[in-house]
Length: 464
Image (tube, rainbow, N blue to C red; front, side, top):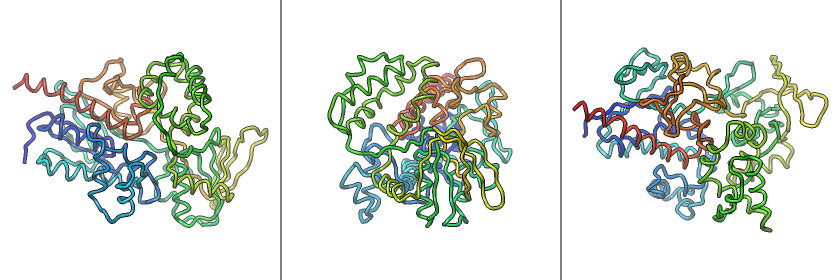
């Protein structure tokens, strides 16, 4: 086995982003370094998205695009095929790379990377799992100090924030701000009415969970526009030459260009190919927009982008469509004005789109599926408060996460990019926008691993 002689790196968060970064660092960028993987939850490698126990919570990206490594595109497929040839899921993946596999299976894949790949490479001794919550980061002249809940402190040369998403707080009786909390659907009268706030993919998962638990009561789902994610389907490769005719600095002109390209063919399904053609350029397009144009996108176009870009696996779409057609699931356009809870449930006042008078809705439970907290100025996490209070970090201008450089280095209160503190995944949404899917995050992981390798090994070589 190897022994760590290189830089010491702390990764805060052991979901997909943090776990993959640990693998990238130990296998490729800093093979002689030491990695402290700090995770406050019991499970390493899964994260909220991939720790679900429901086999019908599927990935919304085909298996062929889920490899953890850019230079090994079939890595996940090959893992599936080796794992259990008798499993229907693995057999389907072996037959077709277009399979949408259960998310819990992908969580097992990430855990396997942390386990087998690191230990078999002989670098297991250099990976330190820390089952605790990081509560503070302090800057030292020659590095950083990470403090965890037990009071223990770790002196490191660099650190990466891979904290994922912060769910909404649960403060009202019968209201659950975290849709992944098992209590959200526990002990629920199967005939009772439920309100889900949000109509995106998280809402879809919650509906699946309710149905699998035998729920037969009405399920109401409300969002500003009441839009449902579209269905995945065939999306042949589509060129992007049409973008050359658009003003790339204008959200309105970009929208017109997309519509023109979709209308240029009689194929009513071509929109999937046109939207997918934007994938390689999404971050570049976002960064080319002015702050005001980005705000305009968030105010007016974000709901439409989300439902066309983040689509449902066909098997999941079938379930949701049946539930809508049966009348059990109703999609409402509007917003929640007020909630009053009592022993029986919650009385919700809804402001429905296009209606003058508010609507009263009585439900047994409200589950917030509207998305995580993004405004770091209001997040109560001890770690976040420590970073902001010291000025080590600052919220991004759009309040989508923390402000970072194009290299994912955290920007401090005075506008300086850190040489030692980086961020990964959703926390960097303000500068990258599309940074929640596996293809986006794996590339970011590799870039951050490379940056840490370059910045931290040179000083060590100089000291030697």
